[in-house]
Each structure stands twice: as structure tokens, then as C-alpha cells.
Length: 442
Image (cartoon, rainbow, N blue to C red; front, side, top):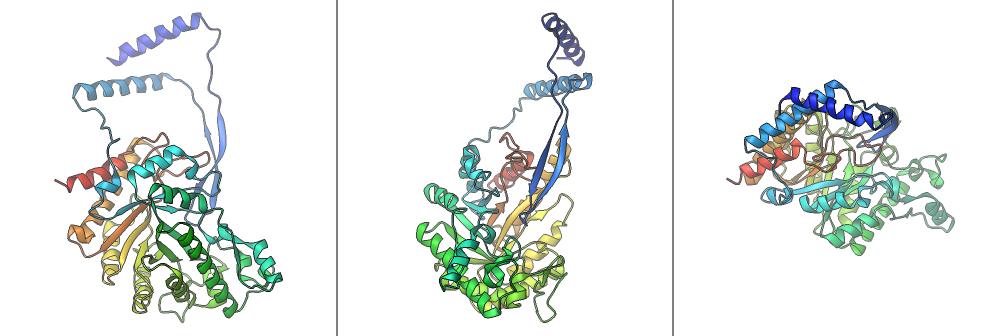
């Protein structure tokens, strides 16, 4: 069909329709507050407005799209049906494939979206709760204060935020990465204070070690007894290496601050908090559960070296099994050679390597940018396959986790780094990843 023909037909139809109607419906202008989930769990609110209006340019664009559709049909190249494809099966020779179970409340988590969870079952054999397993959701302030009043110094825990997802995993044969035991962010301030109240002074080292051990023991005991075999590894400590606020007495640049605020774990325990967290985790974890150190910007040379130093020490003590490399990367950064250098360095330790939070976003949502996003994902997965021992590389890469599945999965979610669009259709990134694995099977 030619473009002029479409425009002419559209005008005729509009005139005919107009004879039977007094006026056409006009789409209203809307504006809504939206938010993006961050690795820190904070949300950034922005206002987005949209206006829909039919214009001649849009009619022309639709005509062009129909022309393209006809050209595609005539060339015998229909869009591929991916319904019988499974990412976890394609990646099986290399590593397990994981997905983020998003959500910051029991009400808005993706566990409540059946289509999301069914798609997760099809493509993934590992999952990570992106927020609800962090200590801020599990620690119970009122229960902890009550414990103190009854002579019990241990903190109280509440597992309501994690039990539904753990139950789903147990019933559906899905494994989980535990995320995370000890992190300076999303840990409530009162947990580090005398009397379990925000206005209290920081407790001493001995008291904080008691609280740390109790928290780890209670949490691990709960998940292992109630949902045996579901959690196969833990991010024991998250983001403890920081070149911007390093402890001068630490050989691994132990984080002292987060911005202008103190790192409460360092403030109460000192640099030993990292090793002690791994010590307690090893003490209470089942023998087949792996323990990981997890961090971002692992490709930056100062952090690479410091993480290597930290994990080398932990390995000597038999306290660690792997390193988690968060994948908050962009279309143009970091250079793939930097990621490769970090993987090569960590592989020297003989530890497992996980890509824990793979997330490549775009600034604008259009065809050009999503193709660039796809190219970046393709580059990343080609590197990971090449670097893995299965591909002849030096690294024992055992899991890659994308930190979400569907763009804009709920009102207010502006994240566009995922492999499926809001309508659950595969994005170009998904197609490129499939091609990476299929090309290696030939």
C-alpha cells in the first residue's frame, strides 16, 4: 500500500465517521508521579506528562510502519516467536540465569503479577529479591525493645516480607540468591543504638557483634528450616569497599562513610565487621550454601585491587566462596576491556564469580536507543561466555542475574533496563542474548 493511498483513505473514513458524530473523543493530558528503584532502595520522584493527539505526521508514520510491515511480510521474514525459547536452557552450559523479583512493599512486588512470575519460571532458574530481604524490612524495632525489657539483648526479626517469595520458590523449584545480610544502607539506624531507639548512642563493639550474630543466625535458621534448599548462596556483605572514604588502617579500603553519614557497621565494630559477618554466616549456613562478597564499580582499578585483597584474606580463612560483580553499566561505559580485566583479576583467586545485578538502561526510550542497549547486552554476554571456563576462559562464572524482567512493571516504575517491555514482549536485548547462546551451539 502506498502512503498517499493511506492518507486519502484515512481522510475519507474520517469524513464518513464525522457525519455520524458531533465530536471526536480527545485523549486527556495526564501527569503522574513516577519512581525508579535504585540499588540503594531509594526512589527518585519525577513528574512525567503525556499528551496524545492524532496528527497528519502520525498518520504518515503509521502508513510508513504499515509499508514496512508489508515489506517484511513480502520478504518472508516474519517476527520470530520466542515462546518456546528459555534463557536458562540456552545458558545451561555456562551458568545459571537469574532474575530480580522487584518491589518495595508486599503490595507492589512482582510476586503478585502472575504473568511476571510465569515468564520468570520459563527463563530463569535463580532469583533475587531486590529489596524485601534487606535488614530494614526484617528487623522489628518494637519486638527488639520488648526483648530488652525482658532481659534479652538480641534483636527481634519479622519474616513477613520474605516468606511469600520463599514459599513461591519452594513450590516452583526456583533457587534464590540471598541478598543481603550486612549492608550499611537500608539498615535501620536504631539497630546500632542503645535501647534500640534512634536517639540512643552507638552501642559498643561487643554489643554490636552480638546483634550481628543474632541477626544472621535467626535469618539463616528461618530460611533453612522453613524453605530448605531454596537459598543456595548469600551476599554476606554488600559494598564495604570505598576508595572515597577508606579507613587508613584498612588494607582493603574499608568504607567509613556513605556521603556525609557514617557507615554504622564501621562506626560500631570497625573494619573487622566484614570478616565477622562472614565468620557468622559460615557458622550458621548449611554446608552447601555459598558465601559471596558483592559490590558495584568492581571494574574500577582501585576497587578491583581492594576487593581482591579483601577476598584473598577471606579465602585464606575459608570464609568466602565467590565475588558478586554488580552490573549497573551503561551503553557507553564501562569499556568492555575494563570488565574483562576485573574478571581476570578475580579469577586468580579461584573463587566463583556472579554478575549479580545486571542492568543496562537508556536515557531515551526509542528504537535507536533500544538497539544500542541490545548491542551492549550482546557485548557483555559474549564476554562472559568467553571468560567462563566453559568458553575456554579463566573464570568460574556460575550465575548471571538481570535485576528485573519487565520495563515499567507497575505504575511509578520508570526502569527501562530490562529484557521485556511493559507488554511482556521481548525487546531487542532479549533477542541479542538469545543469539549469543544459539550461535555458540552451532
